[in-house]
Length: 282
Image 1 (tube, rainbow, N blue to C red):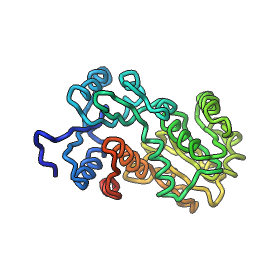
Image 2: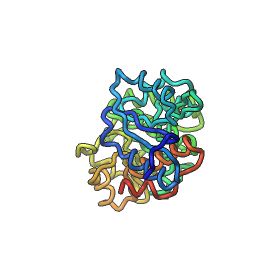
Image 3: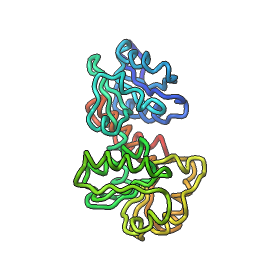
């Protein structure tokens, strides 16, 4: 445990709600092992308080903060600089205070990629991927996969038009990658699913026990892998079905840990000790 004194640095997470966040336990464990004189706290920031909360990073000289729902997008106008990937994703989850200059980053994208590689031994180079959902988490996954050589991506969303708009936008940034869009109907998805290497749920479906249509996994080839960004005490229906079919699968805990490790590196210039943050989310 850190002995708080006049040299103790402060970090935290802005969210609404925020009491459920695992980030304080993860980050404080990493700070303790690294011997860094700093404390990481949860800050319950209501939407109407966000601007003043961001200004407090400067006023109180915080090292930086993480940002969670519902502030990942709305925080952008209050920052001095935005990293290029965060701008492309359209969301920030990590802020670094560089001598009063507040810079926003998105560590969800590298966190997702790191989890794919560590938890599923999956390399996206030259592969075909299906992403379920078309929101902010999807944009992070799209950016990570596109930056690392995926060949084709199908965005499948209940509202097909939203998926089409996202596919068209991403094509402008990554013209060598084939982007397509569809609704969550078998006639749209069946052919692509049968050749896909990776299926990712980027939506919140499954958090409250909901299920995707059964045909999605039934169409997947035997060596495909399944990643569900939703993580909960019990496996989601998507992961349960994937394991019943013998498909290699993982939930979002690895991504949570990896994005936290990436944020730590942004703040302190050194990575946290491996495995420390992961031990807090088992």
